[in-house]
Image (cartoon, rainbow, N blue to C red; front, side):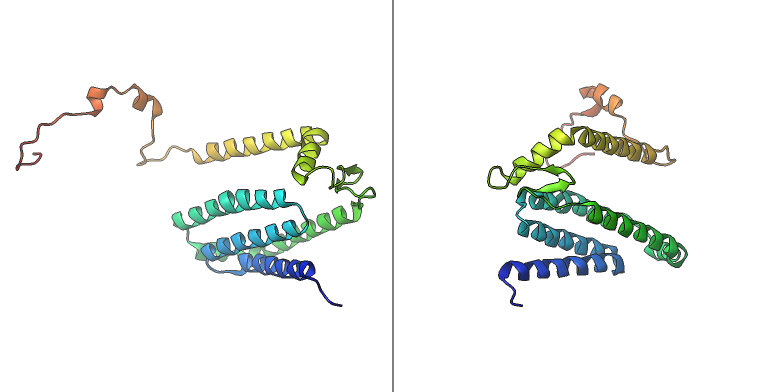
Length: 209
């Protein structure tokens, strides 16, 4: 069977995305893993573009590549982590990891079996929920209409969960440590100019004593 350009690009992007996923978990260098993750995000965005949903592809590149993956890269490069000690317990936690992966596969299979294709030419994101046909609205408008009308409460709940997670991460990492000077915003704001600035008259040729 002859493949057209669209099908060929789909298989190329799909193959590269799978290979990047394998390299993310198999690369020994964590920096290389993050780089493969970024490349995998780009290939996933290419797959989404082939589906005609360029808004999701743009969001994927901006949010995941431009923010999350780059943040991972900087954190991995800045932290002095002994990854050799982390890998020592790999075999001990391997059954747990396999179990979690199997659970994810079962959930994905259940979602796939429960999904139903659209019958009116629209985009069906969940069973029984279809947006207007593509020739009437853009995909950005269709996603926004569906997200902020039918799933507005779920969207707000997800935002609250992310806010709680962010605050929890800050609280967990904000600890009192000996030998570490903490920034005190109140004292910095209340400090006067004469306490921070000192005017010194420097004689030419002598420098500051």
